[in-house]
Image (tube, rainbow, N blue to C red):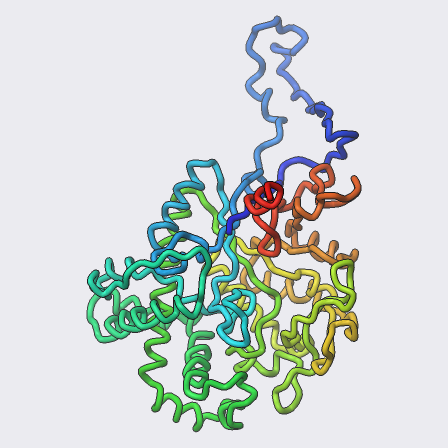
Amino acid sequence: MSLTLSISHTFPQVKWPNFFKPTKPTLTFPIPNASSSHSLAQLSVGEDLPSNYGDCLPKPLLHLRRRAGVLLHPTSFRGPYGIGDLGQEAFRFIDWLHNAGCSVWQVLPLVPPGRKANEEGSPYSGQDANCGNTLLISLEELVQDGLLEKHELPQPIDAERVNFSVVADIKDPLITKAAERLISSEGELKTQLENFKRDPNISSWLEDAAYFAAIDDSLNTFSWYNWPEPLRNRHLVALEEIYQQKCDFINVFIAQQFLFQRQWQKIRNYAQSKGISIMGDMPIYVGYHSADVWANKKQFLLNRKGFPLLVSGVPPDAFSETGQLWGSPLYDWNSMEKDGYSWWIRRIQRAQNLFDEFRIDHFRGFAGFWAVPSEAKVALFGKWKVGPGMSLFDAIFRAVGRINIIAEDLGVITEDVVQLRKSIGAPGMAVLQFGFGSDADNPHLPHNHEWNQVVYTGTHDNDTIEGIKLSFIK
């Protein structure tokens, strides 16, 4: 699925009158003082103007330039094994963007998709906020690295849609084989793996993710809440036993993450060489069955047994009489503030490691969030609660500097959300499809767009332009 987007940063908002007929603006700039011997009044038509004549003209601000790009998740490339990957199609797409004059490629979350509870591979139901989706690893690139033989590659399959269980059956064994060969090898690639493991910005989340995956593989329960108490609460003796039992699994898991990182960084470096900025996507919440929650229980609103007290959602609106119940555990913002928001800082640092800029989904949750009792069946019974606001972003800016983020500010947006977004200098969003069939005041219509905004034809929640066209034909 691909959707176009444009990023407008250059001109102030203009309210266009009837039928979208803009009037040509008049720009007036002060004329610099000419020297006494060359006053403008003494110059004739065609003569040279003073050398400082252009000094007053506005200088282009590269970080505020007007840009255009495409939203396309790598799974949607035409891949040989039922899914797009980080191989040659990704490089060809970057070339296409460059030749088309685009400068942004936006992707959906690159995290491992949920494979339980009918999550259907959604990157918004991922099992770890920092790991990469190893199903995106290109088998052909592994052949180039000498970790697979060409004759080991499976027969290509042609599929219009991704069937994640089928793809996993095809690719997982070969990616595991490549990881095992890397672990037992010598040379530059093995050295890179060891450096990857020692990187403190990687190890801070990778070890927890590896242990979580190893336990999950051993027990195969619906949730970590159902694990034996010593594992559920991370007793050191229990974790040591898991390492002894699953040492090979843990090492392969880490090597697979390295292979994902290596292929993704090759793509990112190539994109940068072509002037393409890669924009990531960060859901504000994480899944309950994840290393993020299991290893950081104090950062979430859980009871003593580790079960969520409150979960995420949104209140009733024009699209749903009972609201939307997402079910993700909510953050304990007071606890997070006490330790300087370290969990969020690590997450932002990881995003900076992968992307040039990134969108934060449900940005409004930082100002005020809808909290639903975990036993509720619908979101209707939730309440609004105060979010961390500028306190969170002040801590992030102190730790990592300014960050290039886009605020997803769709839905129920109040003034505190608008002010928070403006305070951190983040552009908001507009979606053209949301403006169809409504009155002229709809903020998604072009004449109502703001100067600092990312405008989409549609997002992952909408149909593509091609899909809309086909629906009209039918």
